[in-house]
Image 1 (cartoon, rainbow, N blue to C red):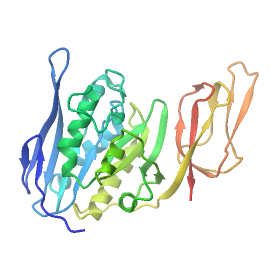
Image 2 (cartoon, helix red, strand yellow; image 1 turned 30 degrees about the vertical axis):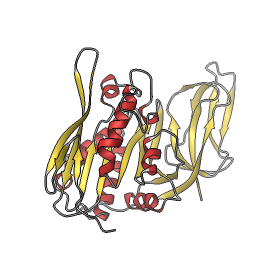
Image 3 (cartoon, rainbow, N blue to C red; image 1 turned 45 degrees about the horizontal axis):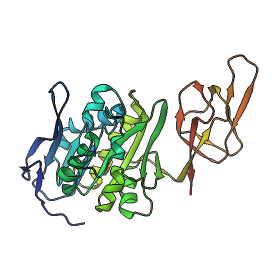
Image 4 (cartoon, rainbow, N blue to C red; image 1 turned 30 degrees about the horizontal axis):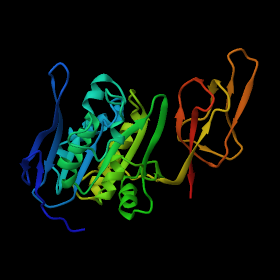
Length: 318
C-alpha cells in the first residue's frame, strides 16, 4: 500500500514530518478543580508510511496494556520511526486509572460510550475527543486490554476474520492465539470499523496485576508488526499462531470451591476432566468436564465461586 505524508493535527496542534510531540486533549475538571488532560505521544518520520495507534488504559485497572505502551514508547526506534507515524496513548481513561477502577465515576464503561458526544457524560466526552481528534489521523491501531476481575486471559488478539486487513495485521503481530470476535455496539472497535479503521484488541493477563508473559507478548507483537510495516528494524522471532473461530465459557453448575490442574493456554479435549467444584465441608464434589476440544484462553483465578460464574474460556479452532 502506498502512503502519503498526511497532515497530523491533534487538538489544533500540527505535528510535522520528522518531529515528535506530546499533545493533550479532552481537558476536564474534577470536583476539586483539578484539571485532567489525556497526553498523546506522536512520533513522526520524514518518510511517508502508515499511522499506527497504540492505545491502553480504556479501563483504569488494565495495567498490562499501560505497561506495554510504556515500554514501547521508551524505545529509541519507536521514538524515531523509519517511516510513518506512531501515535501512542498510554492511559486514555485517566480518572479511572487514578482510582484503580475499571469504570468511570458514574459507573459507565468507557468502551460502551462510543462514538461519544461533545456535551454528553464524561465517558461520552472522552470517546468523542478520541474519535474526533485522533482517529481521523490513523490507518489502524492496537487497543490493549486485560481480563476482568479474577479473569486471566492468555495473550491473544481479537479481530474480525472476514476483514482481510484485520487478519493480515493480526498475522504479522503473531500472538499465541487469534480469536474471531464479532463487533459490539458502542465500542471503540465497532465505531472504528464504520470509519474503515482496523483496530485489533489485545487481551492479556488480569486486572490490577502485572503479567510478564502477556506484557512481553504484547511488546514483541507490536515490534513484529512495526517491523513488517517497515516502521522499525526489530529482530523479534515470529511465533506460530493458533486461530479460533469462536470461544465458549464453561460455567459453574453449583457454588463452592473451584479447583483445576489445567494452566492457561493449555490444550484440552472433549470429555476431559479439567477440574472440580466442591463445598467447604467435604460433602459434595462435582467434576468439571470439557464440552469441546480446544485451548484454554481465559481462566477464573477466584477460588470461591457461585453458580453460573464463568470459569474457563475455551477457544475452538476452525
